[in-house]
Length: 457
Image (cartoon, rainbow, N blue to C red; front, side, top):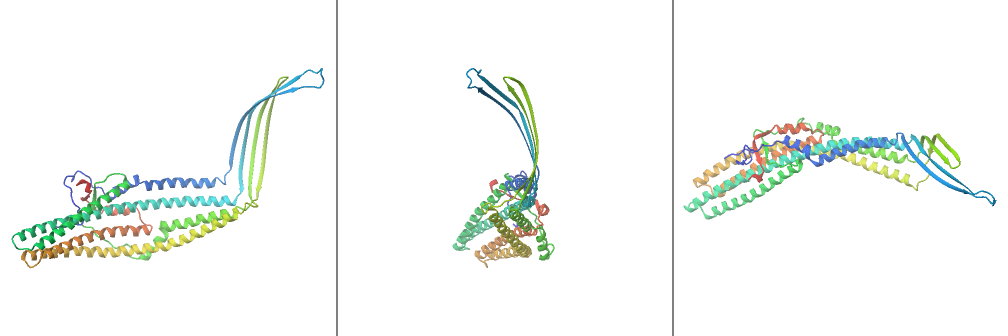
């Protein structure tokens, strides 16, 4: 019986009871539950505070300090005159105090560069978040498609197992009536044993991919929708590798991250290099206190003290043990390192785009060729079976033809999913990957055909 490459083995017990989840549904679940993506969201929120932290170095600082003090002292007064009366003085003081100070940097070149560096940190975090989103999209699509590929592998191994079992039964019947040799039976048995082993391995592989999808979503999945039978592989649009490269030079996250990181290291190097420059700081402070003084021999005295101070401070670093100059050289070397990495990113991305572009074109041609190979293998198997029934072909011919069909079906399934993944990689390398690509791929799924988790069997 012919089986479409999109049709994966059906578990009748659960048919109609379990919803076949689509790629888009899995992606939405991953957006909500994948911890790698959640950590990127937290990193983005944290980076947004970096700019404010760096800006605070340029902003005024206001401090207010309140206090309340209490003191008591006793003084004994004695005289050398033996006839003088001994006396003592008891002094008690209490009252509140208040001070307010304002400090404003007037000239700090180093802090200005730190502020610019902080703004770049936030921009980098935004790109890193977008990169995390693209990574999640690719990881989800790859896991889903690899699951479908593993399901196709299992379908092929089970079909081969069924075919080899039927051939073994036929060989046994013919051997019993003297129309076949014992070697035919042994050969059919050997092929069946190999197919059984392949089925066991295929089931394990399929279970592994279902588990990997669960890592992304945090939920257990049992059924995925597979590709539609009328799936059609298409060439890249546009059919011009230079245009894809131009898109990558503008939109590729890796390239843009490299450029921003280099700028960030540049601002850091300028900040370190200008730490030897003078810094000017202005300050304004107000203080006031109330002193309620009590004596044992006098009426209470209530004193109120107030003061206002304004100052401008000039700080000129002269020598810090070589720390400033060494830090400046270190920051400059780090900037040069990041600059070289940024330039290397451009080359690597250009190679990735060109490679992905060629892979898509090659895979489109391979999909057509593999599909034609299935039709040829099916015809060859039909003629091999007829020849065997007529006694002009051996069972080895039939088994070989059956194996060729199995290999052709498996190769077709592999190239189909390789084509889909290479198309997504081309979009990713060019900086054009988006949710729409998932939606377009999702539209090519067929809810009527499903791949089931082996755990259901």
